[in-house]
Image 1 (cartoon, rainbow, N blue to C red):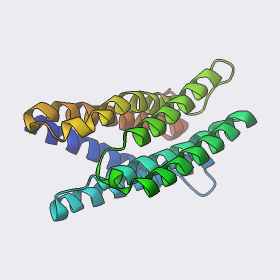
Image 2: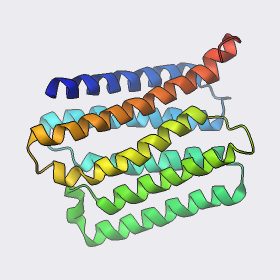
Image 3: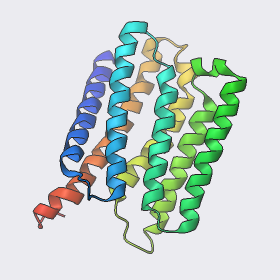
Image 4: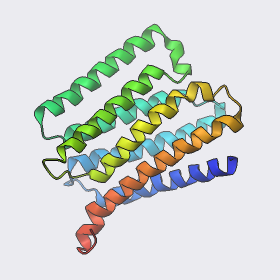
Length: 216
């Protein structure tokens, strides 16, 4: 199981790095704003992952990076969906959701700073639930208009739904024997690999297809 875990991890990291490089090469100043946000998202996720791994070796505890990851993930994906939404009410919904969640988290962590040392269940649920809602709204929009980033949306939707359950299990898993908890983290890595695969496929559709018309 340990071998499977580390293999999955390196596959995920390699795919994340590949997407960072591919999008960095092709996304220009005059590119679509949503692609620029996606590029920032990829770079941010990569940096957080690397720093988190380094801190694990130094301090053997990187749990607080989960909060940084979740909040950054939420902000950047909220910005992405606000950009791709064309309906004003949908765009305002994203802004309202982002504001309410961060106000709630600021109050919660001010009152209970000890939560920074655990997987915060309310934070996990709120962030992933709202991102799931964004993706479902975007998918609903595809019924009437052709959406620009279907593969990214499918990846985000799948990741948000499944990772909610996996993260909610996190507080229990950290107290369990490694042999019991590690399958859960392997599943989590597989879900992230799926997300990165969808982002890679979207790159092919957005850029490679433009150069080679037969590919679609």
